[in-house]
Length: 410
Image (cartoon, rainbow, N blue to C red; front, side):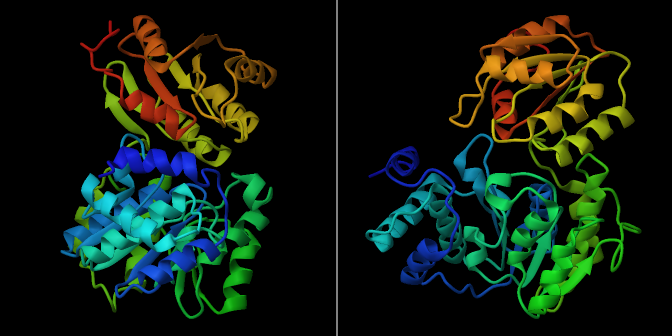
């Protein structure tokens, strides 16, 4: 009997671990498994940033209304199970293993990517559990992403920024076109980008989708600030409320459920405060759009002391763009090379930082525990630590004991 770790290791070594967009493979396997159509309302959430927060708010509100909710998100921070949640709780290892076994039996000689295995497993688990509603977070882009196999009752596009240019294109117009692929004719699409590229409206008009645009068709007015930190979260909340209104004929939601859901939502790694003195903030910001939000919040909410950054970033990101934005928000940098095939060497990352105008002190460490151990000895109670640049950075920091009495703490 394979364990979950066995299944994941097998997928990583035997199949397509790289990103490989396209729906032919997953459609064929889903058809064999009877998963091509789902009998419940489905919301598909795409966008450059804000997808995870939006999924978390949708899930919390629908759960408080009394619905049984299946939510699929990626990537995970600590455990693979985070990706597939029932009523906000990660599913059990045994359920994922059963899903993987069913997929493996159905696929025959079809090679699937790691993400396609996970996507099929999520939908299989949700249908087995007889959920009332499914929330799917797009992995990459939209048009050719595995989650786009299913027709959304409501599509959501949270924001359009520059990221994943090697797959989606290097302009907001091109990226907007890819993300607009989750729209469906005659169905609502809710866009939370206040200045979207023209490709969004153009594609909606071309296929006959009903576009609801922030700033034109709805606003943040009368939408409370959710429990998630950051000004952009109010925009995400407005998108969530508008999307649920569009789905009210199938899934009515009360004002109380909306208010209580926004007030009680939580999500790891999004301006997440894990210690008070010195303040420690974790954020997965890894592109200029997200870095702008993070830097803006840090400056709007200053501390009396210094701001230390624990930082790393993958090689395929706009590193120069992120550094340019964050440079003025950080006083001292602690840099760690990531253990990923997509990572830069530490020397290359340090050289990039210096060539892109980082004039503050930079310290390099072999791992995040070492960086924390040294940095916390320098940090005073009035200082702030912000760990950002990648999901891998946040994941590593969540595994470290940063409490005042933890290893390495002052």
